[in-house]
Every structure is written in structure tokens, then in C-alpha cells.
Image (cartoon, rainbow, N blue to C red; front, side):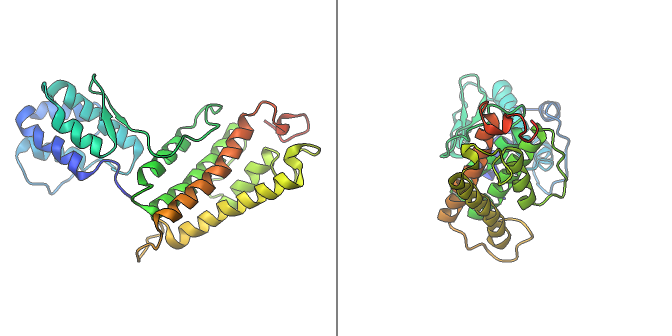
Length: 273
């Protein structure tokens, strides 16, 4: 898994600490975001070493941790950055972040358009986080993308089922999650009869999409990230984009169907809402 904030960005902030902060200030801005010092082999002055100890407690592949680290960086820029923060903004921009006039740091949108159908969900954070991971990995880590697309499909299925009050087993496999999700939305053979969603043409397309989603899982197991791989993946960027486009199609028809107030599954006799 590629880290969301690269070593070059971390080094710029870490190296600036010795000239701009004292120990208690370092403790304050990191602890304000819930971090505690970890263990590090970094050798340097007291202030730089303390900063590195906090960095050691960060999961650099976690979006939740990254958001908190960005707030640490914002506090640094606001309080200790001085009049000219160009050295910091330039290196952040290389990594895909922008800094506004108030020194707030945001992730710049990637090359992918947003998923449709998310606005109708009470909580789409899991889906959004996984989609953001895909954006960041798309052109640099094909194997990671395939793994993330599998997670996106799984997150979408679980989110829809939970929003509909369905119990989701922690160990449920992906094929069963896909089947249950399509069932409750009337997008399977047991769907609402006499509607366009029950037509042979639609069911043929949906059956194909389900097969594609399962195929992504198989591709992830064979060539993607995870499972303690012992050899390099053979996947290229084109395979990553294939997985993204295929996976998002299944996710969007599910999300759009859930959010459609006139969807057949909402009718009396359809699976419960």
C-alpha cells in the first residue's frame, strides 16, 4: 500500500521543527490530534527526534490518520510557518495537496469523477474513503487499486444493507454480499415483477456486472494487493482502470437504485426498506 503522504513532505516539516518550535509546542499540536509518541530509530536533535517519534505512531496508509496529520501540519503552518510558507506548499502540491489562504490543507481531487448516488446515504464515509484511496493509487500502484476496488464494492454492499436494516455478518463473502444487495433492491431474479428492473435485458446486464465484481475479487487474490504476496504483481495501469471502471459500474447502479424514490423495490410487496 502506497503511503498517502510521502517521505519528502514529512522531511520538509520535520527538518523545519528545530528552527521554529520548542518541545512543548511539538507535544501540544500532535497530542491535540490524538497522537502519542511512538518508537523510532531516527537520530537527530531533541526537537526533530520528538517530532519523528510522533510520526512513528502514524499509519501513513490510513485516511483517518492522514486527516489528523494534515491538521498537525495546518497548526504548524498557522503558528510557526512564518510569512513565507512556499517551501511547504510546493512540496505538498507535488503530493496532490493544496494550501489555501487560511493555510488549510486539502486533498486535490483526482482524475476520477465522483461516484453517483452517495448523497442519499446517511453515512457514506467508508465508500468515500475507499474511493479516495483508489484515486491516489490509480497511476502508481495497479495492484493496490485492484485491492481497493474490491474493498469499494464490499463497502458499498455493506453500506446499502446496513441502511436497509439488514444484518451483515462480519465473515460474509463478497458473492453473498452482492446477491443480498441486489435482492433487497429488486435487482435480481427475485425482484419486483412487471417492472423494467425485472426485464430480461436488465437482468442480463446485472448478472454480468455481478460476475465482473466477483472477477475483480479473483483478480485481487491472484495479482492484487493483500494475502502476503511473495512475488511482484503483473498488473499494469490499464488493468487498474479496467477494475475501477467495472467496479464503479456495479456500485453506481446499486447506489442509484437505493436513492431513486420511484425505484420498484420501494413498492408494497418489495423487499423491506
